[in-house]
Amino acid sequence: MGAIAGYGRFADGIARGLLAAVVALAIPARAAERPRSPNVVILLADDWGFTDVGAFGAEFATPNIDALARQGVRFSNFHVAGSCSPTRAMLQTGVMNHRAGLGNMPETIPDEHVGKPGYDTVMNRRVVTIAQMLRAGGYRTYLTGKWHLGGDPTRLPHARGYDRAFALEASGADNFEQRPIEALYATADWTENGRPATLPKDFYSSRFVVERMIDYIERDRSTGKPFLASINFLANHIPVQAPDADLARYAAMYQSGWTELRAARARRAKALGLVPDDAAMVTMPTTRDWAALDAEERLAAVRVMQAYAAMATAMDREVGRLVVHLKRTGDYENTVFIFTSDNGAEPTDPYNRWLNRFSLRQRYDISTENIGRRNSFSAIGPGWASAATSPLSGYKFSATEGGLRVPLVIAWPGQPQVRAGAIAGGLAHVTDIVPTIAELTGVPLHAGSWQGRAVEPVTGRSLAPMLRGDAASVRGPADALGYELSGNAALFRGDLKLVRNLPPTGDGNWRLFDIRRDPGETRDLAAAMPDQFATMMAAYRAYARANGVLDMPAGYTADKQINQYAMRRQGRGYLIRMALWAAGGLALIVVPVWLLLRRRRRARRVD
Image 1 (cartoon, helix red, strand yellow):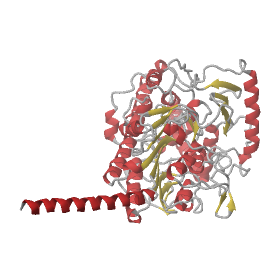
Image 2 (spheres, one colour):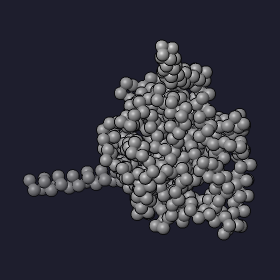
Image 3 (cartoon, helix red, strand yellow):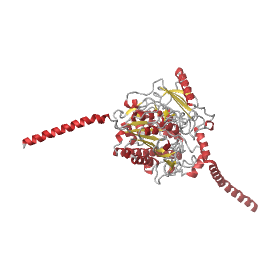
């Protein structure tokens, strides 16, 4: 028996050895195969300021985005455009906004620029999207949420490389129902795969765009292909709206006002290592003195910032829903996550004109108790917007750091080469996202030609060396990066930034700042560094010529242009309604006065 047992152990050993040999032979063959390309998830927030994420200094809860930040790299010097569509065009294509057709947006372009080269106000056909590139490389491609890059069937995402897309063409819409931003658009044009679509009755924007994306991913899972998921949230664009449970969470916060919040955000950003410890701040001239507000103004202001925080947390929760789903399906560790915002926080106050106030009262419940809820129309305005971009100067629409510098997180949980928890401080730009995705996925970039036709070449640079820690920046100290939108302009070169802002944010004069040491743009170096100033002015002029940048008409501001756009979009019907409302309001005054005078005349006759 012992001999038999010994022989059995011997045979078993031989069998295991043979199996090990077979496995050893098989491993090199499998290793030689190309590993499965990573999935790519783009999480694009709308109008989030530099410190509107917990991992960048926010006081409201964004635990799921913070978790991605711990898994990946935070970019503290990442720049976009001052408005949504130009950023979205650059994010989609890796091409500067004028070259992509978004020298300006439909809502903010002056009449003098309409139809000029580079001012198409839609993403032109001379550019190739990341969806087209990845689909050609074997990817499934999906988009949900805001598009705002062209509304005709040949320009919607389904025609620009996305296999499936549920998209909103406008700059924003209601978050609870299929309703446009009243007085700005006539309809809320949601489409699915290029055709008009209807929203569900239980719609809430952040929840819907994630749920629909999960549905798209699962519908085509059997293909075995990796996917690109571009999720474009409406949060926190006007109107600021959130579920009641999220509003309740912040009911005790923001009583101290925007000046104190701005200081607190700056302290946290410094403690996190995102800006220098000695970074100074300016106070924007558009920021009102909190103490000068009356009790009702303060109550409404507190309520709207609570709604803003609630809307951000509601969006973050949906990011968490997606992450949980990808963990369950085994996709999480092989997914590249890219989170950012399309521009800085929105300062527009829709109630700053009596005509706007009159119109909005007819369409919404604008009571203080309803701020942030269904059928509300709320906006945080310049005071809170300045706090949301703290410690930077300015906000959306401008070329200040607060308008252009936003949070960026890139994470690849299963890839050890991506430095988990690191902060990258080198200059980075939204056009860098496309070449970064191309390098991480192994899909080749086009070289100025696509399917037999000439196209705009990608001008961004891959951020992969910064993700790995191989380079502090992907641009050298002499490399120039230009920018212009609505007359607000900048040129970046190393740590220096040449910048001009038109009113109301600036005075139209050019200034020079060291944005690494002085991200708050408090110390103008133009006089102290005349040679650098002159060199960068020449570089900006060269950029403007190459990109067909046009001068703005006298007196132009984006805010004025948006109001003109709203009047035109609403057309004759809007003017008629406004006239009727005005006539009704006048009648409420005139009729009682006429009756009173008539009564007095009768009384005199009796006397």
